[in-house]
Structures are given as C-alpha cells and as structure tokens.
Amino acid sequence: MTTPQQPAPLRIGVIGGSGLYEIDGLKDLTDVEVETPFGPPSGPLAVGRLADMPGVELVFLARHGRNHQFNPSEVPYRANIFAMKALGVSWIVSVSAVGSLQMEVEPSHMVIIDQFIDRTKNRPSTFFTDGIVAHVGFGDPVCPTLRRYLLEAAKETGATVHDGGTYVCMEGPAFSTRAESNMYRSFGARVIGMTNLPESKLAREAEISYATIAMSTDYDCWHEGHEDVTVEQVVRVARQNVSIARQIIRAVVPRIAAHDGPAPQSNALAGAIMTRTDAIPAERIAALGPLVSKYLG
Image (cartoon, rainbow, N blue to C red; front, side, top):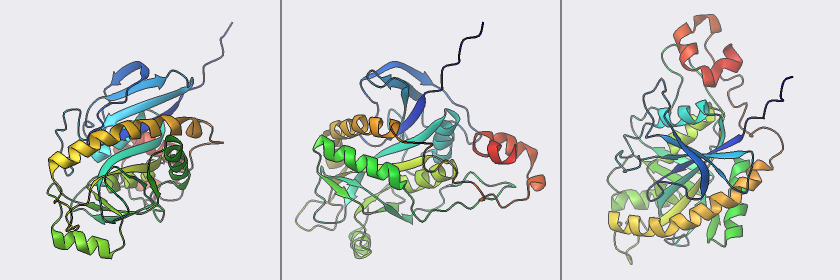
C-alpha cells in the first residue's frame, strides 16, 4: 500500500542586509550548502518554519555573509539567487538598509519601493551568457503583488511606511559625494542603496517574485541640517529597524501563503530565450537546469 506523498512546502526566501543576519523564531532550522554554476553563495541558506504556519518554510540568506565579509560589489548575486531557485523558493523578500533622498523619509522609516535606477558598474546581473541569451520584461522591476502584501504587512505592524519610490542602486562601497546625492534627488528618487538592483534582475530571470523592504538609516549627505552618513549611524539605526523588519516578514508570510495560484512572476521567462535551442551548448542547458528545464527540457 502506498502512502500519499506530502506536498512540497511553500518556500519564501528572505535576503537580509546590513544588520539582519538571521531570522529568529524559526523551528527545525537547518543550514543548507548549495553548489551553483556561479560559485558559492554568500553562505549557507538557513531553512526553517514558523511554528504557526504549517506547510510554509522560510529560506534565509545574509547577503553580505554572516560576518559581513562581502562588500556590495563582491556579493555573489548570481549564486545567491540561483541557490534560492534551486531550493524551490518562489518569492523573495529583500531587506535592505538605505539612505533617504527625501525629507519625508526619516531615518527609521520603511519604504516599499517600486522602481530602480541602476548606477552600478561591471556587476554580472544575468544568468544568460556563454551561448544562451534571454531578455525578460523589467518595466515593473519588483513584483506588484508582493509589494502590495509587504505594504499591508508593514501597516499592520504599525511601522511608519511609505508607499512606493525609486531606489538608486550605486556601486559603493564609499557613500555618495554631495553632488551625486543632489543629482539623485533631482531625479525624484526616494532612497539610495548598493545591492538590490542585481538581485531584482536575477530574480526576474529566475521567475521568482521579488520585492524590497527599504529601511531608511540616514539622509545620505545632501541634508545640510544633518551629519553626513557614517557606518556607525547606519549600523545603529539598522539594528533598530531590524525588529520592525522581522515583524513585517512575519506579517507578510500568511498573505503570501494565501495567494491564489503560483507566484506572479512564475512565467517571466516564457518567450524570453532568444537563442535557437539546438544552438545552445548542452552544458549550458544542464548548468541552468533549475531556470530553463521547463522551456528547454
């Protein structure tokens, strides 16, 4: 007699930025090492479940490493997102410390962003190279559905949260010059950070719904009435924000779990692969299996 197979759990990824190096309150926590075609991720991925949410698992990864050993240019973005995909993650909540570019976004406020401006240089931000080319749609670079769930969850926790805004993704690791900071303000951008744009592009290629909780830690260097941003200030305010971010994550999980149907970006790659199948090197198809197997076999 055969026993019915248990359905695979819904897996929600959480990528933690400065100050958020673990998720507390998870049961049956296991560290999972994942090998990827793009090298090792930032560290082991911690897989666990919330006691009150059977059938849901969280997969947590500290973006900069658990000891914060990767600067923003060194983070292995491709390996991180590929590892999430390989573990069956279909949604990713990114938590990131950012500088505020607008007066109304005070330090300790949260912004659920909806757009990006890319100011990075030489960061690999596609899986599709070396004999295979794909172009995904990216007009809305964060998943609108997950963004809405995060906004609702943030309001539920009582956090001071701003709905929407553009995140300027700069190279770093140095902070902006005053001229740059004022230029970004003239763009109408709301916050500035150093990490999320590559993640968002790669998540879209991996057909994962991705959205960001941007935690304001400072006023960058444009605000003449405030001291210029320092590491000490970022770390201090980020630590204060982390408890709020954890509450938002806990509040968003039931909303994601109640979502009807697959994650909204689960077919983002459909029609995007431009290279003729018989021209793609077999080793590339094998290497990118978790991403392309449903399209290329």
